[in-house]
Image 1 (spheres, helix red, strand yellow):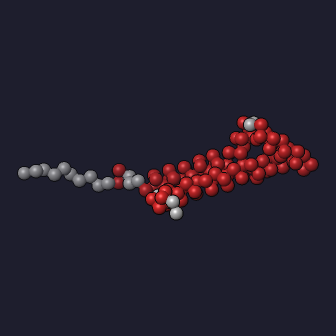
Image 2 (tube, rainbow, N blue to C red):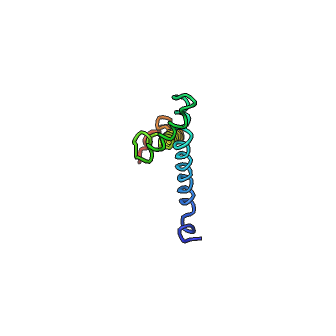
Image 3 (spheres, rainbow, N blue to C red):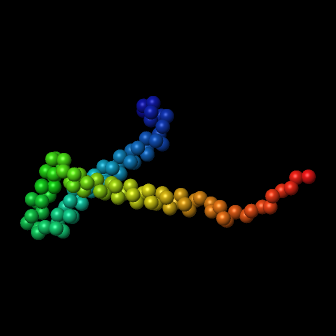
Length: 107
């Protein structure tokens, strides 16, 4: 076990989890999402051709292809941030719910 693993095990778990989110999202963005899009937009005999065209777009650096590849990750992060914000708002006490005590007078 390295020194970093001994000193910061919780941070390493967080980084590992984020990498898994990224890799899973990229798999969805590179494989599943393009196949779904192509199968909806084109007839069955054109799916293989269009998917190869998409992969060539990734290799060429086509912005639309790369946007499609990262959309699942961006969507996941957006959902996670919304869930986090809702949880944070629910945890925060409402200032109007506090009972206001009258000021104390000192003798």
